[in-house]
Structure formats: C-alpha cells, structure tokens
Image 1 (cartoon, one colour):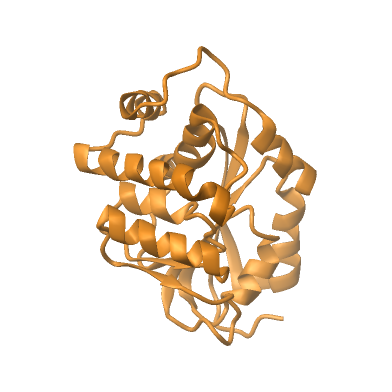
Image 2 (spheres, helix red, strand yellow):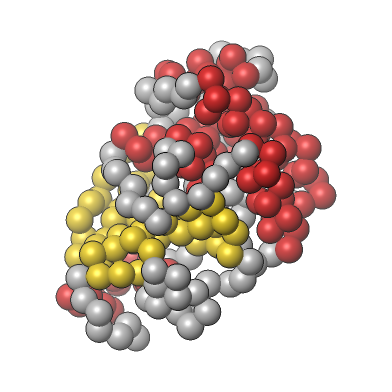
Length: 236
C-alpha cells in the first residue's frame, strides 16, 4: 500500500511545463473543469505560497514542484466536487498540511469544516492558513482522533492516504451520525479495504459510491469510495 502511494507522489504531470503563477494555476484548474471566483483563486494562491514558505520548517509535503503541487494537491482535492456533494459539518481526519480540507473549504465556503491534526507544527500552520485566508466556519481539532476523544457530531468524515478504511471507521465512530458518510480518497487498488469494511462491520455501513477516475491531463488513477453509516451499533 505504501509503495502505491509513493508512486502517486513520484509521478510527474505530463505536457509542457508552466510558469509558477496564479494565472497558470487558474489555467490548470479550468483544464480540470474546476472554476474559482477571484476571491477563491486568491485564497488558493495564498495557501500555495504559505505551503512553499513554511514547508522546510513544518515538514508539510514531499511534493514541491509547482505543477505537481497543483495537480496532486489542489486538483486532487477539488475535483471530488464533480463526483460528490459534501454534507456539513465534515471532519478531515489526519489533515496534515490541510489536505483535502482546505482546498475543499475554499471551493465550498459554506461547508462547516473541522481539520483534525495532532502534530504541533502542522497545527500551527493550519491556524495560520485559516487566519491568512480569512476562512470562516472552520476549526482545528488539535488532538489525535479516537472514538472517545472526538465526539463532535458530524455528517461526514473525509481522509486522504491516512490509513485503512476500517481504522478510520473505528476512530470516528463516536462522532459520525447514522446517515453520516465516510469519504475515502484512495488509489486504484482499494478492493481489499472495501471488502474488509463489509466483512468487519456488516450492516453498520453501506457502500454508496465507488468511483474510479484519472486526474485530468495525467496518468494518475484515483478512486473515491463513500460509505454511509446505517446503524448505531457499537463498532469493534
């Protein structure tokens, strides 16, 4: 699993190289059918600049090139809106540098977002981003998410490359309401994890979306998997 994830991070976007400007970012987003208004584009650009500025000290991302960052971070997160409507409030578990929570919040400003991240350097960065971008209805949960510590009711949980699906289901069981959604951003080989969810939790969750897709203008295969919680029964 780790090797497949590393392959995604190592691959470079295809096509001619672009200048690292806000206009180039907008062009790449539009090529992926992601349209931002001027305020949203400015927020994303500020976010990009903050990542570049703080990355060495805060250890935010291994991806540092302009085009790979736009494709593998911003487009990778924002393109989900073409396949799924996010419930609110939603918690991003293991947010790290803010992926996928910050780009999704920029794209859908009315969402109530919780960024769950226990590492101090990244907590500091996330709070800086929220302040600098002027984001509202968003907060940082500054602890590790476990069923007993995180009990804030949410209608959705989203994760990207954090852990297996069943582990996320367990750690968020104290907050995810019946009817709430577990939203997983995965690589193409998610079959074993899906089957483990079904085997381990039975009727407690129902698979409601399994969408395979490729990031535009690249060979990066991705998969969006969504489960709905259908029972209040205790998870083990």
